[in-house]
Image (cartoon, rainbow, N blue to C red; front, side):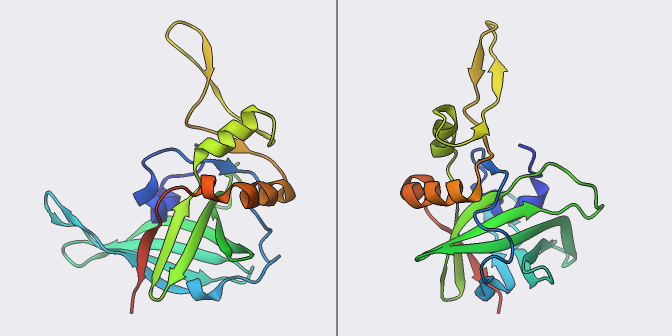
Length: 202
């Protein structure tokens, strides 16, 4: 994947598998009103590890001038020193009926342009908790291979020399209108997993 893993630390808890990458967001930044409920500081409470309790990870959603959020993650070491991971994301929201989505794009602070695509998440708010789910790669890989969505699935050479389609990578280049239609029709397949939650830091 071309999306920088460090830049999407917010979603490391879901990186058991690979993720579909999108050339286009569901809606352009500023096309819909940004969900202002996301603004503020959220945290993933650290669980117990082999060396004791893992640190809580903080995610600061800051409103920016260009109708997006800047999101930076940080955590405190056991010595109480705050560490910033250096990863910065741009996030803007899309809403269709009662479904809420985040369009996530890593930001390169050097200004160098890279061919990074978007991640698209589904989210919901429940009081002081924010739940989110990452889009499943399966429906998009199948749709691209069958020609139902524009995109590419890389091929890899096996030990015997035969070329096979990757099961773990797909880049969808379909237009926003096509994406919206596909998400609307296949929402339950795309987001088949459980929501994982962050807590609002009071």
